[in-house]
Image (cartoon, rainbow, N blue to C red; front, side, top):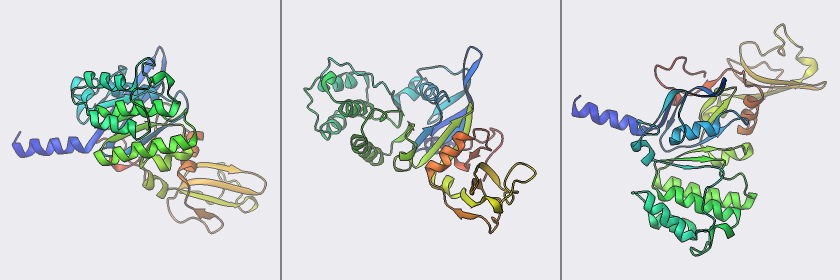
Length: 322
């Protein structure tokens, strides 16, 4: 391999923070995650959503190297997940936020420094102090929001390139959650960190994330840039008496479109679609919210997947539905 070819390979690898191919995990005879395949471009803040039991936590644990895969693999900036090179570039914060309650905040950060060769003490302390937290305070006496900030300080102090967060904000009240998110996103943007964030707070995804992965039914249903995902969908509505049910059970006028979901009552019929052409004049068509798109795919887990071009793994089978 020439020097130029090697340099190009390194550049391509650094542009992809995470590449998952055929990833699966089985417990006994039950697959909690199956055939997950996607790429996450570097520098993105990505929401990972799905119903309970969809395999979100399992996926994060495999990427972090805490759990083995039954099938497939995950690579972090080109390095196999679980190996030492990948571990050095990843921080993982589970929902439980495993901090020692008898430690002071300063002792907690000191432990982080001793365990991580690339530790940034100034970054960790500044992140804690920005939340008005005393470094001499015992972790067990902190509020939930303060403990979350300390846990995030430990995750960021490692100077990771990829941060994995499993429902980190679930137990916070709305005001503290907003403040914590603002602090986290500020650090992430300044340092170019990639974030993969598992969350059930669907209504807040558009303020948290610029990228989305949705898992349901054991597989990946949505993957791509948030704005692009919204732009390829339309929310339709029409009077029910003007859109009778067609031969396939769908309201008339939706032939030729990818129908994600429909709802029908005596007065109105609504649908979320990926248009395959012009929509009939009987339908009122508007852009959906991200929450509407996500909830539709969660409710209809057998809908045709949508995997954007920059999320597609070359050679991994069927590409993109546009």
